[in-house]
Length: 274
Length: 294
Image (tube, rainbow over all chains, first blue to last red; front, side, top):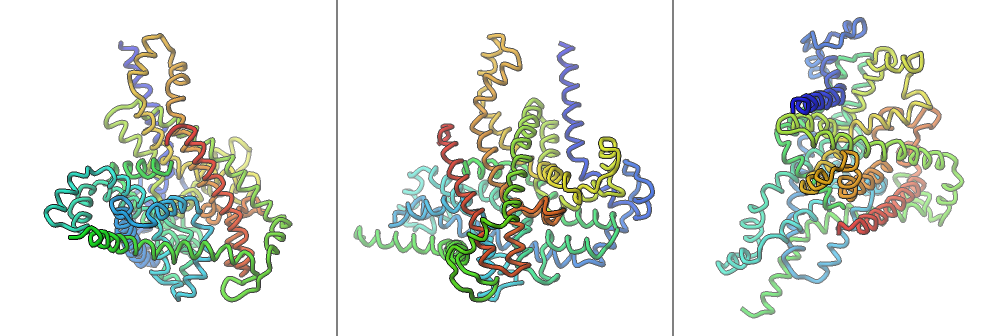
């Protein structure tokens, strides 16, 4: 029995070491960001033995990072809210109402899964230009609002709600909107939270589209903005790592707080995709 | 209340509820889909009118050596990522699922964390790790090749290293799906196998592997579709170079449209990717159906 125990401990230790190696790039970025630039190019000790915040102060005061935060937070929040709202409404109709074209609409939503978003970017850029929305928040937001996965997930969850509950609300004189916002939605707060978080992370991290549609530094989102600084800093490893970690901080903290929801959302949305 | 009255109300509600999505979907998805197809038959610049040129863009495309280079690089990248990331994720998932409680949660977090990072953060960190002069991984590379290598400027190293960065970044997603798949395998199957005296090796190949296959197939096909769409990491790490060794299909679309102002030609490039991915998606659907998931 002790031999088995020892084997288990050895196994756990081995997996922990592997995980530590996996996460090492993040540790190294943090360590680098807390050193002075001179130190980095002269002595690269692997231990985090210096707590020098000058790189962070420098980055926050000289770059447009605060403005990019604002752009990222604003556009990501609006995208998340609109995707969830339009998605849940459409899913409710698909799940609970009879109307002509229902099946066709559902098939269209499922089929749109297959279209690779970047293949539409050229046409979407032309469209946004026609709408005079290049280099605006709406230019960043609008093409990102198509998220069939949200509709499909909501529909599945709405389908699963027993019909008796619905009848009870209808007997009390409630209409469809009462049903959606007072019954179906509250019953699915869990999935709403999970979908919100993963949608927000996706919007926050999107690089390609904001990179195309934004043409001035002041309009950039975080993932696009930080690539600009790289060029202007020259050799500045501590500052680059401070910048990278500041850019990633919201999603890292968000993930650590809402870990269970993120995990749940990833599994549910991928299960649907199959 | 009459039945037809109620019916009419239901229709009106349905129209109201689907309208916001339908409008967005039509304007920002269906119309661009039509538009990219239409543009691919014209010689339009990115902004402005062009002339109908029929199949000329496609003819040019299939005589364009750079296009074959980018197709090949996409294919090469798929080879470098899809199966390796699935194997690595499977090993990690098997290891993590043997752990318990807090240790398991901690280890899973460590393996998953890179997945939530923005791509440019990932590329900045790895550019630093692999920095030619001061990168902490250069001593490792030196140990193998005898000298430091500027990996993203080296034609042989560039694609494999972008693949390594990509796997590090996206692997957590696959780990998560495979762990979910492992949890769905009933424990009594393992007990029965143990009673029959099956070795761990036999247990894996006779129980785990066949029962996990639907999830493994899902991971493989999702990865295939994802990696065909590679652009961000390439653009940020190597810009398509050196000598076009990392020039991929979306890179060509981007350059034609936004740097060379060839909207029509770029649309034809986009259409090839479009068709490629739709075909793969349909194959995926069939494959998973045969796998018995639906």
